[in-house]
Image (cartoon, rainbow, N blue to C red; front, top):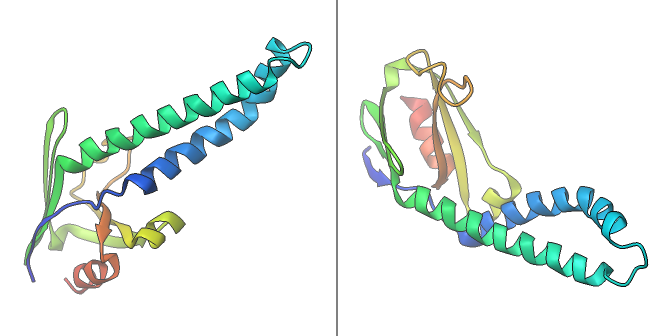
Length: 157
């Protein structure tokens, strides 16, 4: 089996919802503090809340667009003897991971990923750099379509 140019599936709604929920939870914590500090009489409460919601929407939109640019410049190749990863966003990163070096394979799907039919497969290896991104060792195939089939194929090898 050979899967050339397997790219992460980008879904604007999925990433917009993800960013919006994070920012919404953050604003739920801090909006009462902001409202209490700037609104002594209760007259500006709706203006402040609409401003916060507008900021949430703008930041969520920009975050989802940033993810789109990263996804556009990344792809994976699943070959007969190895997995290759290419990313060229700010800097070029190429990883060539042979199946014989993989020690563990895991598949994760958040509720949003399940809804959109994608998943993240983590390939852990002794050959992976230990210091990359906070000490995680492995290669992530993120937001791939049909993740169960790819996971099963990689598990057999």
